[in-house]
Length: 97
Figure 1 (tube, one colour):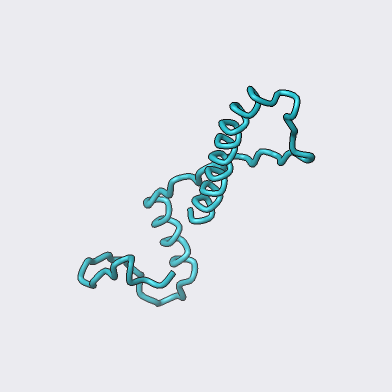
Figure 2: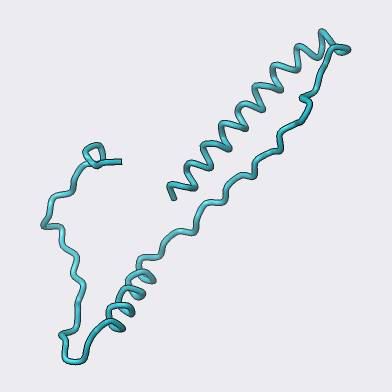
């Protein structure tokens, strides 16, 4: 998701720059039609990034259970994952990048 967000930010910045360039060219084009110059090598338009598919918690839990079952030795107790909110959650601003 972080890679998508970074790519999307780059695409959005490029799109904004293109809009600003078009707005800037419009008045200049009206005044100086003859002096209009194109970029020598126009940059290719970057492709808008596609967001990743949402994660289904049930599928993820099933995958974890299957992996845990495969890694079990005969005679070992069955693992039962249990979620609890007993611990404290560190605020995002205190987490390292």
